[in-house]
Length: 392
Image (cartoon, rainbow, N blue to C red):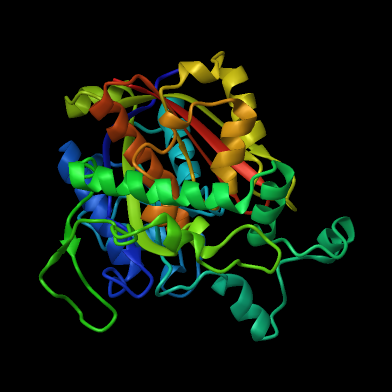
């Protein structure tokens, strides 16, 4: 079977809700990333055989196959198709898996995988709340309710359940959140994100375009203090999590170009990384956020690797208990985890986060001269994707 290689990566800098990217239609935001991948790789636009985009809230401006719409808003020709994926927060990581599987099978030679989410323009939970409010029903079927009687699937409750299960107190969550901002600040100041971020025009909801460029993740709090984080009120009384130890609502898009050996030969470029392993796992949908732990254990077993073989890890910071429990259970090295900060500081643009994390991981491996990287993230419904890459 052929290999799958990443030859180009790109992402927007994250935008806060109502912030510097709020004026961008998500289709056009995704098109900016597609165009950047074409430019960075030098590929003939007509040689791209598919575009697979992750998106969680596929309604309104993100409806009617946002991937195809992004193709039509980009420099790609009409001959390039597009399809949209929803594996909740792992949507664009799954898009990467689908792209890699396509080129490894030989059915395609060059595929763009990515994701987009404008959480300003299409608020979280809109696909559930809007139809329910209109009397069009709810996603939980009678059979689901019979299997999980009285259960309200909630990522917020899942985060509290994880903190309690793994004995992680509020102080540890707050300290982790502070460290995420510290690492993100250091990375931004050192230019660690410069090669991955595509500068795009600042467009707020109030102004169509300012002419100024958005190049720094808007969620980073450069003035963050531990005391300030510790003072944020709890999400629920008696709990341990706060908004400060949770991922930030974020607008953004990201993507990677994936090719096989024929694609490499046609492009005449050196690959950035090789996909070494891909797997997915379903787990308890009630605690919901714990799936990355057993998924990583199984992935390492299937890959014939040990935790110490992995040089850098990207574990999405949906809530601080997730990476902390992951570290605890896998006896992993905290110094290798989310070395440039995570979603607590940088934002979590839902369907765009998978290839956003991959973009950061590929670039971090190159800048630090490391070999293997692992990416995983918790997903709604109690699932997790795991991707292991080798820097080339």
